[in-house]
Amino acid sequence: MSEFDTVIRGGTVVTAADTVRADVGIRDGRIVAVAQTLTGGSRQIDASGLLVMPGGIDSHVHLAQPSGEAVMADGFESGTRSAIAGGNTTVIPFALQPRGASLRQSVMDYHREAEGRAYCDYGFHLIISDPTASVLGQELPALVEDGYTSFKVFMTYDDLVLNDRELLEVFDCARGCGALVMVHCEGYDAIRFMTEKLERAGRTAPFFHGASRPQSVEREATHRAISHAELTDVPIMIVHVSGREPMEQIRWAQHKGLRVYGETCPQYVALTEEDMKGLNMDESGGKYVCSPPPRGPADWEAIWEGIRTGVFQTFSSDHCPFRYASETGKLNPKGRTSFRWVPNGIPGVETRLPILFSKGVVEGRITLNQFVALTSTNHARMYGLYPRKGSVAPGFDADLVLWDPNRRETIRQSLLHHGADYTPYEGLAVTGWPVMTLLRGKVVAEEGRILGAPGDGGFLRRERSPYALPAGAAAPRPLNGAMPAGA
Ligand code: URP
Ligand code: ZN
Ligand code: ZN
Ligand code: ZN
Image (cartoon, helix red, strand yellow):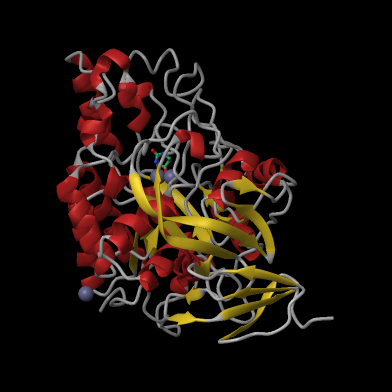
């Protein structure tokens, strides 16, 4: 019997801290050795010419989540299949509490959706749409104990929006529980005002989705969330930041010493407002409708500035797929009458890594180590999965992606494994592509072929985020190889 079930030989191991030529020894689903030369191993994987990195952790994906009358294109099976094909080994989708429902019951419903279907590991964030006294007083504290250690709250959307008082109540509850709160920052009243004004003027095409929520709307809500977090003395994560204005608010808060973190996504460095035009005749603009909306090249540069300087800790997909040519998707009968009814969200779990690698590493904007931090390590650290997930070192789960840094691909719908019928990145040429994905030592995807099975992935009960511990508790190390929040 060998000391190792599997040895990955000849690759270059990349972590958030180091880039070294090393072999990786795996036993019973865990990494047990990383060394210049390992002998033995029942199975050998040749990684020469490849990077060996921790599998992607996508801490912002939506699976099997209802959205008005629209039906999401991915449940747990197709969504996680797409994730592993794209080099990911963990996703953290959301369990949404509909208004009036028990949060615990909602969590159980999502577990039923996920059980036996997932190709990769998963946890859940809790979307709180109805912060009643019993939710805040009983359900949330108990759920945090059970490993659901992060919440998401919304400052817009008819069915999800919380008013300022409710935001403050949730923040205060999170402070008490040690949970990390993700905040969707767009101002509800401003969007309603703009939407109705645009509709009165007959401006109903998908393009006007962007005009209904310009950056000032996102900037104002970001500032308001930060102020409420300061008032309640609780750390928050501002998610899916789209451009310079909200980025500068987060940077300002960090320089003030507030524990405010930031997430951004591929759509904010690769898509533009113009994409939503798609010329109203064929209505293809709807393919790009997401919130916040894509901005444009000047904002891409601001997002890179935030990535490089450590304003953002995580780069997530916000995978939120709807079929395009579908009565229950983007082109639902109401969606054809106004942008207001086009379901918000775009697919992206499978293309997140190649887009960041190509535009970030290959084009010289970030280092390989920052790439790993932004796609894996920081997600694990931020959301209570470290040191089980998020690095290549003894003791970590053998969740790995073998990556060809020189492979050129053109992103095409035909290459992808999601349930959507399009990709918003169709035709985008990238350099760098996943060759093999291992989940706890098992090869689950290779060269676009799925070798894993539904049920390979399991539920992850997460620890509390070290970034959400009470102020004054041991300060976490800086993230992203750049300055810490507050530096
Ligand atoms: O348009 C988007 N991003 N839809 C997904 C829901 C959200 O706000 O993250
Ligand atoms: Zn959101
Ligand atoms: Zn989202
Ligand atoms: Zn600073």
